[in-house]
Amino acid sequence: MRIISLHKDYKKVIAKAKEGNRRAQHEMYELFAPKMLSVCRQYLKREDLAEEAMLNGFLKVFTHLGSYRFEGSFEGWIRRIMVNESISMLRKEQKLFFEEEEALEYSKEHATYIETELEVNEIQKMIDALPEGYKTVFVLYVVEGYKHSEIAELLHISENTSKTQLFKARKMLQNSLMQENIHSYGTP
Image (cartoon, rainbow, N blue to C red; front, side, top):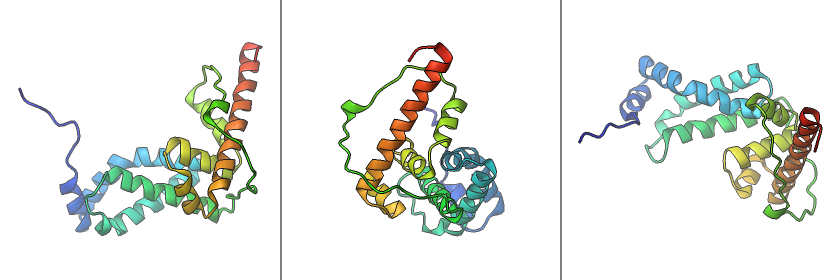
C-alpha cells in the first residue's frame, strides 16, 4: 500500500526563497496569500487596508525569512506576522483603543447560545460592527486561539482588560444575533 502525502514539503521552496529566488517567493505568495488576506480581513474592516497589511506582512516574511528555523508550522509563522501587521495597521489608523477594565464575573456558564442560520458574510458584518478594541480581542481569542496573557502582551493591555473586551464583544454579538433572529423570524 502506498501512502500519499497530502502536505507538500515546503522546505525546498523556503530554502530557495531564503536565497532570494523570486520564483520560490512568488510560489510562496500564491500559496499563502488567500489565507493570509482572510486573516488580515478579520482585523480590518476595509478590504484595501487588509490587502495593504497582507502585502506589508509578506514583505516582512521575505525580509525575515532567514529567521525561520523550520520549527513549528511555517503557515503559523506567517500567520503571526499577518496578525501583528494587522494590529500595527489598526494602531497606525488610530482605531485601536480599549475601554477601561471592569470587574466582571464571567464564566462559560454565562455564555448564551442562540440558534441561527446566518451566512458567513452576515456574521463578519456583525464582527466588523464591534468597536475595534472588542473586535481585535475577540478575533485573537476566539479565532486565533490566543490566551488572555498573550493578548495582553501583544496589545500592551492588562489581562483583565482583555477579558473585559472579550466579554463585551460577546455580549454585543449576542445582542446582534438576537436582533437578527427577531428580524428574521419574528421571535427572540
